[in-house]
Image (cartoon, rainbow, N blue to C red; front, side):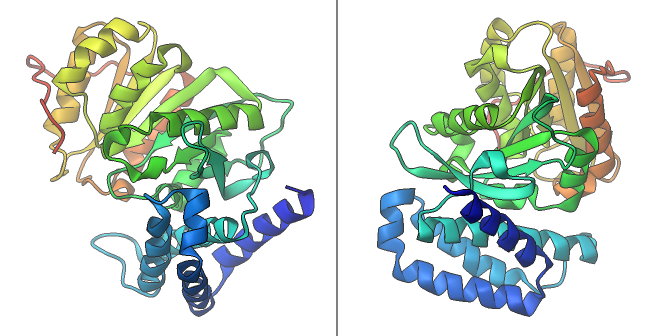
Length: 338
């Protein structure tokens, strides 16, 4: 793509994030109508299995604008998150309609792009955050971030607090959609493609390559990490757990010095906090460097885990390990995710 087109995509995304709810809703609705009319043509580019996922995102985003924040979600944070997610989804749909894609190397701040699949040649979505401090002359940390079940990559990176963590730590974050497949099964190549694209696009510090995941992604990191065990300096599981069936392969393939960061909410009613706790005990008892962070009153919602997540993120970046203390009992890892 020529530089002017890339600059136009970046400028349009910035405009949409700052747009009024009415203007953003209008853009979502008009783009959704155009997308629906051309869905057949888009399917030839994006793949028939997920082509309507991106249409549904536009409709859902438009409905979310102006809605009251759910639960304990702070209203200001909710509004900014919905705005950012909507802007990313609009960018994705527009790039597919125009068959003109934002080069990952030219993204600064928050952006959405598509990476060609090595599996079938389709274009697959990836949300990216590049801190303003990034310079090709200074290798940067990289996090490959895996989303939760029925969550889009755009919605994973939309919250401001996640972007603030990346900005303060100078970390590039890459979140592939991977066709929304459960546990990322059958689409592992989409994760590889996004990771390799980031390594081509940016100057990455080989000592600071991390694999992180939230919810479903917090379970999947323990399956994905052993596929390329030499790649990762650390693995972070947020509201997830190691399964008993995966423990043997993890221990037999992952280098002993890989660090693990386990984050949970004490009030998680989706993934019982006992499971991440037992994951931390298991890793500690098998001699792996592990840190454990339990957010008091935290639930399964990512925004409720902010203090614990911030400490875990910063510790991971600095190479700090806080051996779990006060955790007792024999680890009894779960057999299957909820």
